[in-house]
Image (cartoon, rainbow, N blue to C red):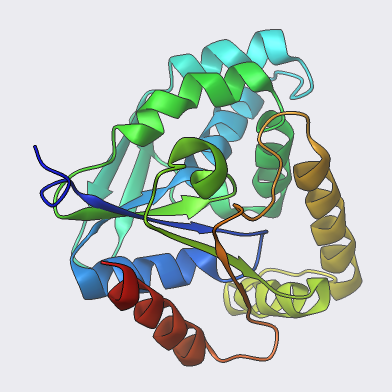
Length: 226
């Protein structure tokens, strides 16, 4: 297979609440590319471990869960349903407690190693949008397009607050900001694959941008490179 025939990989990294999930889906639909939501894999490891009553700080317990993860991604017309051990957990993995748990299990080197090849296996023609925290630095370092999407903690908390309100969930905005800052701290300072832009990534700060503006900027970057 020549370089021209190989599937294109576009990585979109960034902290929680930066909008990378929504924008990755928009870009994948627009380009007709496959989508890897790597964060969902770590959320699934956290949820599966919590269901087993495991302490998420115990790497020796969590790593085998990552290796044996029994998950299916079922693509529907308007969304992708995530099935864990024959149970639809699409909504369950988006709970705040699972989000925080995902950050904890992602800090374990054995967990990251266990999921590495599973993530790389998502590459397929015509291309892949890889959404995560270390897609451009660790998982797909040779990707021709790397984007690091960020925003202030306050802006990200506001977005999450509105999402949860729309779902009818009660949440405290100050607590959300504190949780986001705690997760940023843990993700950026972990020993393995810390959250940071790849040296050749384009950084987009979406704090004062609309989703349409960010999407247009990302699409322009893709068109320049592929």
